[in-house]
Length: 305
Image 1 (cartoon, rainbow, N blue to C red):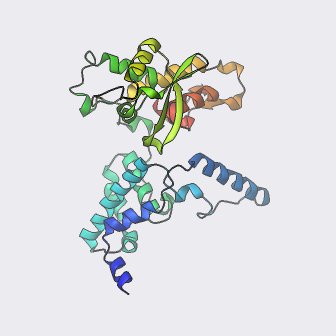
Image 2: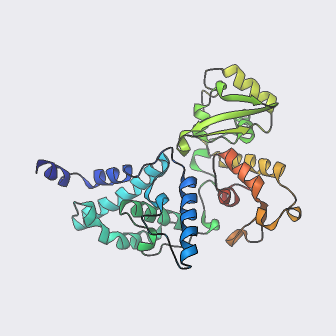
Image 3: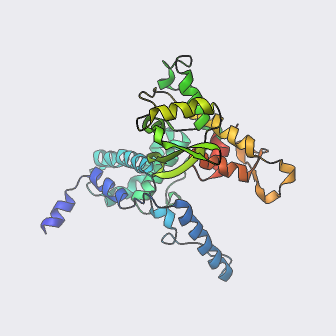
């Protein structure tokens, strides 16, 4: 009885945190889970052409694969439950479920990508999919504003004073968090090519090795001089997305084959705002992995120029 009373008096914020933590799958592969789902669906379709996977069979829906996703979901889910508590006096998470559509309607003033994020967060909390809620605004590439315009943190950033840092970013494609933790011992030399090895906390600790594509001598020298110490004692507060985009585009252009000479199934055809643009899937996958991603559509939509 005491335990039940204690559970009932847990705050809504705490209930959200515990619910999301129960879905954490750090170190697990979302790609492997989705591949298993596709294989299962294929088997079911052989028996019944109208078969679909049930919610329980869709493993990737039940899991959260990175800490950054957990933090985003927790933040937005807490906005919702605090609103429920203030407006309707809710004390239990289950009591909040009926107000999701009303909340999402009020949040329609947000950008479509933010609306979708909130819907995804609440779907995780309430063990369902976003299809169980009212529809949010359609997302369009032209509506993306993050890292597409001058950021507030770039206001006082001097490209002249930080020229070496910028060249380092363009040559390695590192995230800002990775730059802050980078040590000289992460330099790798294989088959005459220099790589940097990273186990990034930004993507669930995923390990990757990626080539240095320019100013190799300068960057290798700096890495070796750093040794066990950090390569950058100070990382300026600025947005590195455009430099990662430069790196990705350079990798892709170096590896891309002539489209007319490769099979149609090895070509990636863009849709929506990018309709008419075509890429080499093989080159895209390598460029994507160098950035720390696995899905080629990510670089098509956000990095390749």
